[in-house]
Length: 366
Ligand code: NCD
Image (cartoon, rainbow, N blue to C red; front, side, top):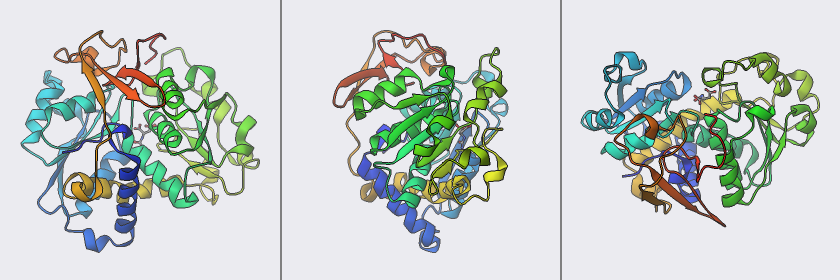
């Protein structure tokens, strides 16, 4: 049984296999339509969502499977104090697959530990959003052939944006060159930079102004400001002004650049670009369906064909408590600290739940 909690749960080969399957599903849906007949997908959404939940539900229904779940945690037992572990044990009896979104970093990993069925992370706090990153990578590969060698600018709230974290790690892993564009206080957090540097041997270029680098970019990946996670003293309009993407800014961009956005957009990406052939954000949200269909099929029946060998992970239990106040281990007291050693060109340690570096040398800003 396999889970998808971060992209580290899949090898590059497996990711390409899932993309190949998504291609087939996109072009020949009828062949696959009965694939999940009699299977149930539980969508447990403790945080708001439009695209992720609906596209998972649509993907499951297109495979003739069925869905159950909640989108309002106030209506679920968590409102009575139920732990993630107990909810996971319960849902194991009700479904064949879980997609979970939660505001705690690492919540999906807890679900995976206690559920006896595959778990997909639909976004956990400011940590990761692996299925969005798969959709994004798939969209870049579909338009550009490959990510390798492309210059990919990621702009917006890089500090709190989980889609930005997972996409940056995916781009570095597949050989793209990263440019991080954000006001200094919203720059990419250290734990993501540490992984990019030590595992993929890259030091991304950083700038506060999109205008300074726009002409170099093959991909312009815009993110909204995560206002629900912002400290109260930050003015959103001022923060947004340095990476606003509009027709004026795009005049200096490459003629074949791609404009991407995980959506929803909130004043950082102008509607005047929607008809621009470089706009790829609606294509991105459309690609979410075949990609999520392929992922569901890979986890619930095609494991042996599509998923070969899980990447080796080294995790040790015990030790110092993670210092990230938004880490699930801070909230769910039955969890012991777990430290993952990533073995790349150089080994690095991080909290296995929320990804923050160990030992922690910076202040936590989540
Ligand atoms: C993203 C998310 O929830 O992290 N949305 C999505 O899933 N497409 C991005 C965001 O909310 O900004």
